[in-house]
Image (cartoon, rainbow over all chains, first blue to last red; front, side, top):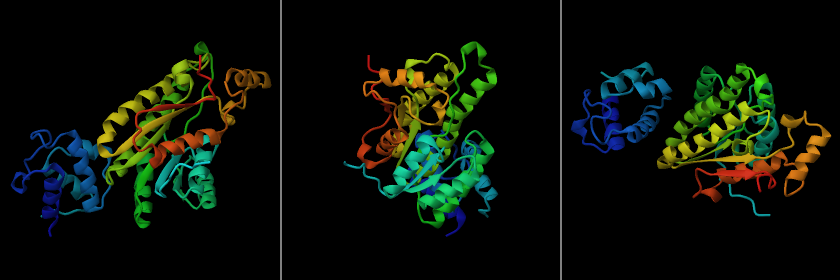
Length: 80
Length: 249
């Protein structure tokens, strides 16, 4: 499984949304499922899945799927 | 004596090398918890962790950079042991006694940094780790003076009152992640914090308590352990006085 697929799976499971909803453009607070509570569930799941520990600034900054990829890339998780 | 049930999970104790923090570290370790002991001194932390068979993680609770470094280290240490952070007891902090008009802003800032900012940052990082398991227990330390006030302790009481507000708000916000947050409000406890009291002052305080004695760190440790244990699994957002009846009218 690619890192992109793993990322999509985490978003699907954490936000309880359909797979085709998870695009780079999907942004925090633009759908009811991605609220502040779900955001922390998502963060915990991303940390578990990719074995990283995100900083507080990164948690605040992670406001879209695209930015999530950028932040994880800083932790040496590559998305092609 | 019935002991609170503790499940052997990892508990981080700040300010662990003396006073209430030390008593709690020994209490939890004796009951099977993996204690992660913290203070500013790496030497003191290592010695205590070695004695208790726990983990040592030295950092200053007021230093954002150190805390970040420490929690990354802690994450790695727990991962190696295939363990997870379950509990936090934030016991670090000093007490400032100084008449209001003799209290410099630096003194107020110190109280804010230790008791509010420190608790805020350590809880933020700890709860993030606990969210992974959707379970956890956090205990903060307030003081009897938070609600009563105390002459000569305006800065300290202000900071401790904030801890009580923080406890209730954290309980509301973190409950949905399976994390409970409570606080213990000790009365006058016989630790180094009160070493400057005169014999007459100590006797006066003893007379003011219903139980006619000062508290000891073990009294507070037992209450903190209760909040960390499963015996308090339906309790959150509470402030428990451990004061020998000092607050009773």
